Image 1 (cartoon, rainbow, N blue to C red):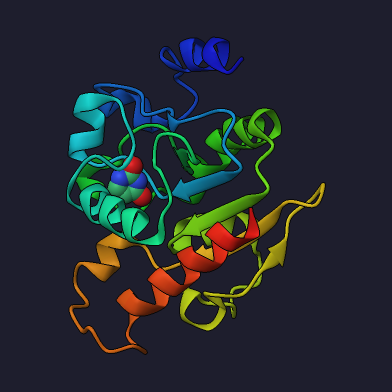
Image 2 (spheres, rainbow, N blue to C red):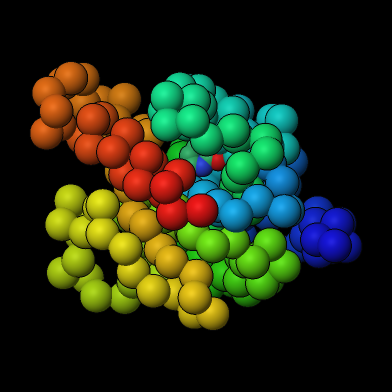
Length: 186
Ligand code: URA
């Protein structure tokens, strides 16, 4: 059902990110999934393959999902706030996010997940507008979106790759706990 939108976006020129696009990075996983995961933006590996979270951060995300008992292909639908790679992997600009957010909202409307995992601050900012609510403060909490859909912010795997502590209160363990909570919600 989202195939048409994907096709259309392959030729999208609505924001400057199209200038560096090798491949559109639309989604991965199942449109029937109860859990949707929203990341920030494609990186170099994603831009090359046309799939989200296939680089280093993606591999680490896969490890976390496996530990939490979430099947990436069956239980998840994965998308990003923008569908084209920002130059030098910078964060997407506000105007780029705005140009692309209708596509993300359409994906949510079609998939109708029970829970949306907001992966990192860029995804959080799209849905939770209070700037004081940083990811460190709000991870692990459940927010309401609409139509009963819940939002769960988690740390981004790229951040976790820089945080090596295995302490039970450290970001890696907390993220596993958050994913376990999501699994129990669906
Ligand atoms: N890869 C993605 O597709 N999204 C991210 O946010 C990071 C890496």
